[in-house]
Amino acid sequence: MNRAQKIALYNLIVIVVSISFSVGAVIMVALSTGFPVAFAGFGFLGLCIFTALAPLLFRKEKQYKVEHDERDILITKNSELTANNCSNVFFVLVSIIALFIFGLNGTVSVLTLPIMVAGAYAISGLARSVSVLVQYGRGGNNG
Amino acid sequence: MGSDRLSNQMRRLRLDNGQMTQQDLADKVGVTRQTIIAIEAGKYAPSLPLAFRIAQTFGVPIENVFQYKNTD
Image 1 (cartoon, rainbow over the protein chains, first blue to last red):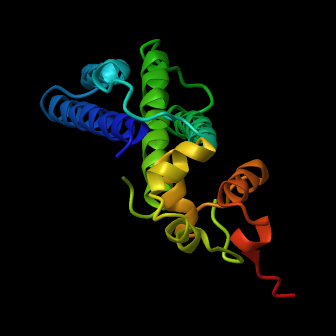
Image 2 (image 1 turned 180 degrees about the vertical axis):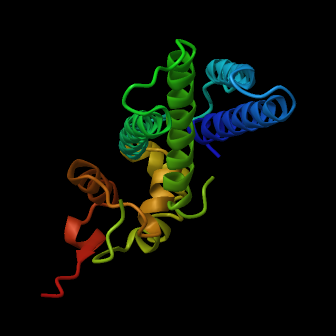
């Protein structure tokens, strides 16, 4: 595995754990207390902040002359496009779902906005990590 | 990223050139070993400059390294 794959796998694990904790917390609080208190469970999405540690945890491999070549740039570009598209789709879906849930004359809590942003960040990070791992995985036996 | 119509003789040329390793070839042409592995496996189609650098490293025309099958 190269550095980009390690970072992608680490980010994937962190984001999946974060989303799992969030959904679990929301369900548990909703069953005991109900909404809107249950939305506080989405605070676990803040665990995604640990993805910022990835560049520090996985240092550059100095033993090789070339660390980032044309194939790595292409994979990075494709994964960024995938992540951007997924976050856009997420925003559109959440907006449409909110319209159906709350109706034309409904209102949403201000808390909904940071939750949407955090959710979009988690979804785009998830998509980026999966895209990186899949594209590198297609390259055959990796060193 | 790969191409079903593109094949190559890189592995044979590497071995014919003093049993060159994938890492040696990667260092000579300025890419990572993973990229050389992907090219040899047909999973990645190199850019034109990279393809020419690979051919120049082996000292053969580019057609001797990469073959394109036109099925039309």
